[in-house]
Length: 136
Ligand SMILES: [Zn+2]
Ligand SMILES: [Zn+2]
Ligand SMILES: [Zn+2]
Image (tube, rainbow, N blue to C red; front, side, top):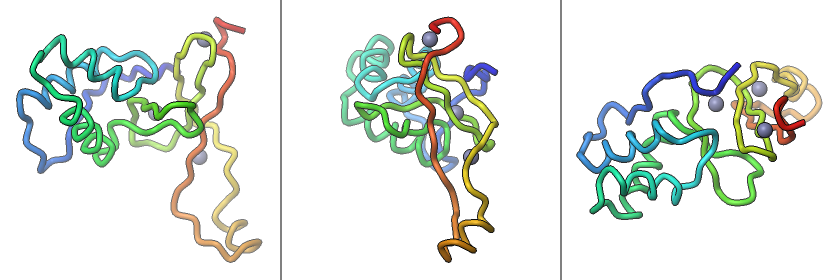
């Protein structure tokens, strides 16, 4: 299953789509696998040369809230991936940087967490690092 599902990244419904934010969305469209805010900034500047890094950071925040992108857990530098809202985890290739989605999930069940720890789980995050089929 490829991570490139073709869905257009969207801002939260109430966020205004300014030309500069549009440049960030365009840049996001061309981003492969995972990326950093600076990667996104470099791409957005080619579309909209006057864009500032601060604008890119703010747009990234908006995109996180809409669920269009998600931070990768355990990456060395803060990195993001484009995401679908359905439940899935990421297989991140440390060789080529490709990110695949998987619906396999090894997280403990809510019932088990409740029973063993008295903990009420709401969500969990897990990304798996290794080598993709092409790199291994
Ligand atoms: Zn994803
Ligand atoms: Zn790879
Ligand atoms: Zn899961």
